Structure formats: C-alpha cells, structure tokens
Length: 260
Image 1: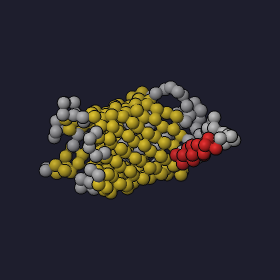
Image 2: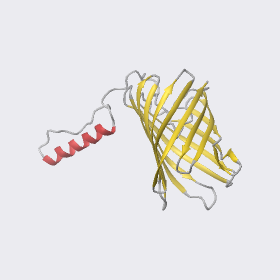
Image 3: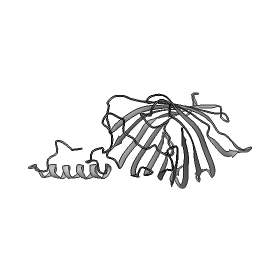
Image 4: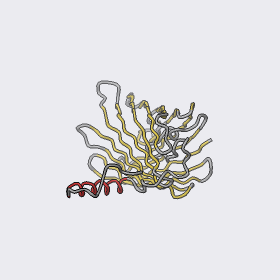
C-alpha cells in the first residue's frame, strides 16, 4: 500500500518535515502495511480474529449455518467479582448472525445468579468487495431483572487485514443505558491489533473505552493470546489493566470456544 502525493524532494523545508512526520506516524500505527494481503483470495472476505472481551456474533462475513457456543470468564478486581458470559451464536444467512447470552455474576445476596438476558444481531455490508477490508453493524438489547432496566447498543464494525500476519478490528457506537427518562447515552469504542504467529496461535491487544458524559470514563487494556486446539475448539486468555473511577485495577479474562 503506497502513500500518494507526498514527495520528499520538495523545495520548502517545512514540507519535508511534515512528510517525515506523516510517514513516521503511518509506519508506527500500521505495521507492515506496505505488504499485500498474502494467502487471501481476492473474491473472499478477509479472515480477521475476534476480540476476546467485546465479542462478535461470529466473525464478519461468516457463512450460513455456522454455530458456536462460548463462555467468557472474567475476574473484575475493580468490583471484586467473578463474571461469566455463556452464549450461543448462529449465522442464519451469509454474513448475518444472532446471539443469545446470559451474563452471570456472584454479587447478589443469594450467590451466583443471572445478571441479565441479552440478544444481539449482526450483519455484514457487501460493499465494497475486498480481500482486505470488511465492515458491518451490530445491535444488542439487554434486560437487567434486578433493576428492571433495558440497555441497547448500536455499533459500526470495520476490519482490515494488512498482510498474512497483521490485522485490525474496530468498533464504534452508542449505548442507551435505559429506555426511561433516567437513562443516558454512552460512547463505546473497541480497537484491536492482531499478529498471527501460526494457524494455531494469534497474539492480540484489545482496548475497550466507554465514554460517559460528565462522569469518569472506563477503559480496559488487555493483551491476549488466541490458541486453536482443534478445528472446533479454541481458547482466548489475557491479563491487563482496567481504569474505573480514575483508579487502575488488574483484570483477568479467558474465553473458551466450541464451534459446530
């Protein structure tokens, strides 16, 4: 991939400096971007790994009939609790999927209980057709029985495969914390950089940022590893840092995945 319209053979010194800064930032932000997307057929969607914490409803561009069951386990040091998120995902048409999830935690007085009921829908945009770029959308609705509240998320998803090793997946959207007048909007941002070491091992860095107007933001930064044991089983795990109420806490997470 080339940067057009920038020349280092300019007569004005400030243009030379400007070009050098742009090139340096571009090189740092997109490793190995100059290489082509090797081993990716030109008539297919690019394969991009899924984030561990902010999960997709199957990868973008998934084929009809794919079925997955997985569980995310987290230890939240900020609130001193263990969380589990068992879920089932199914693609009912090429590029379109649905997910049912039951978030569980151990913070209730009665012990472990279902914290919410969640359903998500996801779609893939067919334009433009590219072997490197892919994008789509995701909507999720969540009901919290203890608070009798309904939460809604709407996200735009986009990913890019730089070459056979490096890829990125990003999400940006809005959350409405409740449908009543007491609810408010929050900004949701998720960014991931992946490096594929082998067909069975991928390293990643995931950043989740929740923007809250007039309140402290919440940020999670978590390096992770993705291990593929067999064609149908995989494990993602990682440890990182979460910032809550202007304080930093450790955070542990793992996701066990079964596909059918």
